[in-house]
Image (cartoon, rainbow, N blue to C red; front, side, top):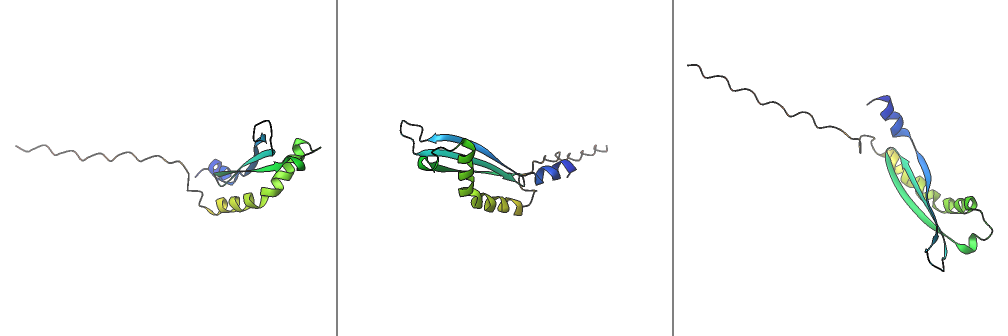
Length: 109
């Protein structure tokens, strides 16, 4: 395994993957905030609805802060599970070339 693969296996991230009024109707009840996350070449997603009464006067960044606080423990737990798995799982590999069949000896005549 080359050094690029090793550093990629250790790369971790959490990203905002969704930020919308929910449901997307005339009467939303909150903001749905979704987070994608990755560790050890595995990824996951979770989201949470932040009720509108908790978002009054808040900026989008403050709403994201409220959301991440409510899902942080679950994300940490899932990322720890990802880290505990072998980095071999999920790695792409190639099939070996098929063995060549031995040539038949020419009949002696």
